Length: 518
Image (tube, rainbow, N blue to C red; front, top):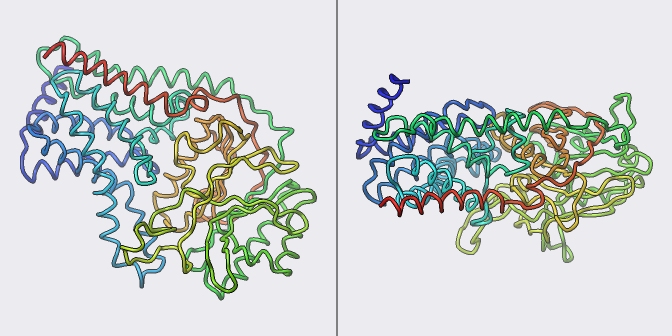
């Protein structure tokens, strides 16, 4: 321990004394290193390098500008390394969009990095040697993660708490404090070793291990929660999940649309030895106009079980005569007569993917196909169909928003996430997307069924356990009994108010202590 403290002191002094380009480069690199803790790498120990490094760099920030630069570039590194796969979407139509790749990746990472820059400026207002700076950093980090989930429609991708999707026992803490609460505890635990080189403090070692102790308590409590989890699904309806694994370049190719439809029909007719009650297809599996075709309806009648439904993603166009006046990314339910019954329209659209912000100013095309921007739907809904428990439909990245996936006033019994991760290729993106889905299931105490064109399809129970799945880049169909929901979790009842209160209390306590000791 003495050697660790001595070596840490030397590193801390060198990092805090850095200036100029060296400071900015190290900030970017340790931020990029932190991204290795996210799926699919799950290298959690890197957090115990990156966050002490961030603390020591901020120790040397004498101005708000310096603090902002450190935080901004740390965040830029984290998001550049963690979201590199976004550029794959621009390669689907490379002739039109390949030139945008450096601007998209750089602009996205630097843009989102502004949140960590503002976080660093905020913590500098109360920065002082000792444990108080660790507390204020953890609280502020979490608060700015929450803000990132709301500002400019929100983009809460890869919160630090998501790293625990690989550790089922710690993952259970999301049922109590949500992924943002896990971020707070994780940043505190990872940053706490930065106090070891501090001089004049008798509590360095207890503080350095206190965060790990909290995580250990979560792990023990979470393991007990899992141990008591029910397994019986005998009365649950059986769902057939179809993952066609159609390449994005071929998905809307006019010469392939009929073949793609037939491919999904064939997978839906798979003989798995179980008769499913309902069939599930992924996001934009068909166009809405195709569903109105009599020959398509005839094929659909073959795959929809008696008294059951096909739940499928569909691209829906509203027209006035021959002119398209509105486009929607929808979920459609189709009965055993091949007729559409209910429709849910995606309300949380992807900027530049499904619509172009400030279109009158920006002369850019959206990445997805179609002549016009998608329109948002009215919001969350709980859909009810005979023979199927009520569910909350979520299309694509609507499943990444903590506390915003189900109506408390009309609580569903399960979550349905249809998606198309073919945009991101064989990259980290689909794994990160799936980890977010696991978090939502645990937070809400609801099973989540995920149906991907390609990506990772599967069924996740309310404890985050993957009951069955189809891997990235594979085609197939699986039949799975829908897990039962559990009683609303603490997080489901109070939502993001829980981690917000924790962060505010932590910051207030630290601020009061700071003022008393100033």
